[in-house]
Image (tube, rainbow, N blue to C red; front, side, top):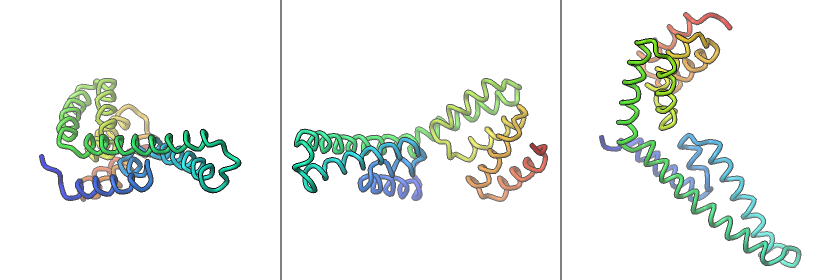
Length: 182
């Protein structure tokens, strides 16, 4: 399965954002906390390096400024590696195949009433791509069947955002109407 135009666009956008602000590309690829942490750490180290090297060099020891500069450059390089690895994982053909296999097994477990096994398989699929609409559908259905109605409501609502097609909307709306009020 080849990359779609939107996948290529998403990769280019993530790589460009990440080059400008390390961590921003990870946020786009749904690793928000990791991306935010990297961005903050890079910003703090860069500020310390700039402060010590250019703004008030007499107030900050040269070794501290250089250590901060090396740390900022290291964080920048690490962030580039992370976003490339994440883009390859999430937007590559291997990920789609893995998700399809996991979803088939999860659906089978769901039909057989093996809810813990289904939960495990869906969580694995979510770790690959938690923005995949079919993964979200199975997750919402599992939560509904296990009686976790508050979480199920959020999962069905998220499915509406992830998959705006008519069929998915009808399925999610029907499920939301059948859920008891919590």
